[in-house]
Structure formats: structure tokens, C-alpha cells
Image: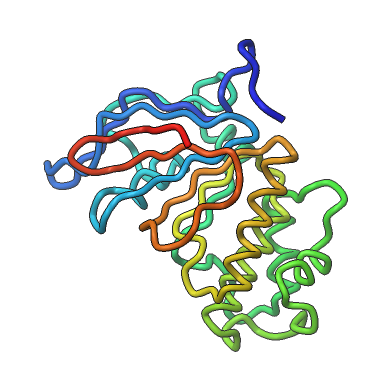
Length: 218
């Protein structure tokens, strides 16, 4: 699915600016991401990649600018329905099993139609770990469980902060397959990266954060 002239971007930001202790982190910048598209957010350490995604997710408040989701001003309810955020921390209950974690998260956030927690575990390579406590998993396995949570989310916009971290080559390919499938279903993704990994093989543009934000078509 791709956007048409009459279809607003799934996510749109204009004049977005964020400072910390009066020091500029990024902005002002404009960005948008359409259905069926990925926006790759690049930049060195401290360029503001993680901060930008946290602002878009509603976890931080921008100093200036506006954010729209599917053509409407982004309220808390819209963000919870439209945005799924994958951050550096796994956001998992350490003393619950993997399958129980997914059931709890589906109860809180809903789940994608025709997708079940057990199937999601199999998709990310954690079949057989259903009863394993999260605190017993490796860093890579925790990342895979977070990817299973992402896959179950019904939200059309994915905000992925360094999704390839702690993954081997098979895990990197898994992320790319998930992003490709999500975009084919009409979703969109913002993906932060240092540029050390190949971009997912999907229609994408690049937003480079630094002294001046530059958005380029792929």
C-alpha cells in the first residue's frame, strides 16, 4: 500500500525542536512517513536519534513543533493506537515467562488480527522458550522477544531505535523481513541506525541528524 495525493502521511512532524538544559539536540526539522514506507534516521552519537523517536512516541515533549498522526493532531490516545515503540530497553517483565509477557502486553495494547503470542514466538525463533523467564534469556533473545511484542502490535507506525543491536546475522535478516511484511500490509516505520547495517530492502528515505537535518529520497 502506498500513499496517494489525497491520503495524509501516517506520521507527520513540522518545525520539531528539542533542547536539553538549553542546549539544542535537534531541530527545527520537518519529517513525514507514508504507508508502505520506511524513514531511516541516521547520525552520530549524540545527534538526537533516540530523542527524536521518544518525542514522536510521546515519551518526551518537544520545545516547538507539531505532530500529526494520520492527518490529525497527535493526542495520547492516537499515539497509543497508532504507534509501537521499540527502544533500547526491552520493556519486559523479568520474572515472567516469554509467553506470559506477550499475553500481558496483548491485554494492555491489543494485538494484530489473526496473530497469536505462540506464533509470534515461533516467528522470532523462540519456539520452545515459552516458559523461560525473561531474566534467563540472553541479550539477543530478549531483543527477539521484544520483536515478537512488536509483531503482535496492531499499531501501523513502528518507531525502531537501533533494532539490529544485539542480533546476529539471522536476527538482522529477521528484522528486515518483519519490516518488509509490515510495510506490505500498509504500515510505516522509522528506523534509527548508525549506518553500520544494511537498510531494510524496502521503499525508504533517509533523515540525517546533525548540524543540519537533511532528508533524502532513496
